[in-house]
Figure 1 (tube, rainbow, N blue to C red):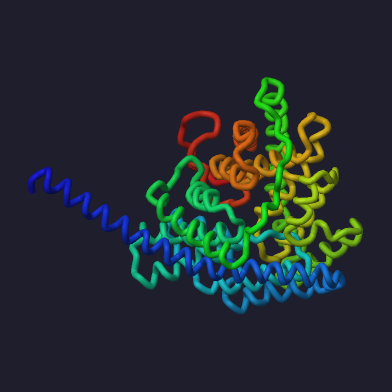
Figure 2 (cartoon, helix red, strand yellow):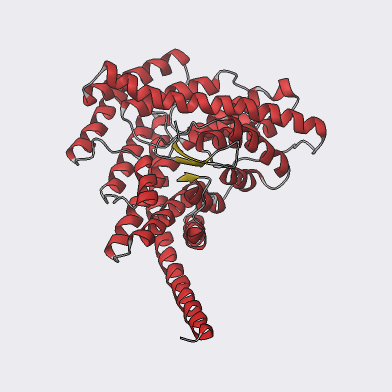
Length: 419
């Protein structure tokens, strides 16, 4: 074939593929977006009931056992949660459709009774499993199936958190650190934006929850302060990751029986909550994050949130880790604001994105999160804080199936799993 004709033929094929993926991504954005909106309202309903009836926390032990029982009945007692979604993207492993209703129900129940967990990690499983089922039904090959799963992750994350750019890049960045799946860029952005617009039509994301009123100017002094904060946030992110990974190991070692383990875990969360004397650390904690950014300082808050999240998820309750990570970062950042002479809200915002970056090993996503949550002012300092946290957090991470493909310190291939 003539080279020019061959090139034209290839371009036409690429154009057709591009159009097909726009359709696929739009469908995923709509379908996953609808489920994610329902999931949001389910979490909101559960949280309102818990806050109106605080004594519902006494149901923690029984609900934990019920969640573990549900997973056992469905043959998914050894489900790895978000880790399984990462494997599905990297290695085209199949995802079971039953993951979606299970994670939906179990996460709502966890929030209802006051387990310390988020929702975005659950959203990744929800969107990934639904998209994987659709990809299977339309008989996509293994490579396209991976893109479909990433589209589902992006759509669910975007609809729930209202950050479409972060959602799209996070789905591409979190699987293999150092490698971005650029072929998925337009599909992920499309599904994320469709889901976001759908969520807005359904009444979500109408209010700016995290206003930052004062930002440091870019000066040598502010650079030094932000680098110190970033280094300390790296240590906090390591503490968070080690805690959530160590807790299930201790539970399994001391209490081999899963149902009993979940019951005891619920009792421990209830006990710690009673000793603290506040329900600020139960559930996701969005309202507490807002309070801290607006001026409240709770020095011990980041440690309490890490402890309760580890006790909750380690026992077998279900939910996400990302909002607890943001809570931890906001609490730590606001606590250090006076010491480092950084405006209170800005210090909390820096802590949020820096601890998120250190825990997820996703610096680009963290920078986009700062932009979408707090605006463009001070963006170079957000970038610096995230960069320092990313570099100094080592090879720890929230998800043990995450691959660290390239070294953080040298341009060399290492291909190791996050610790």
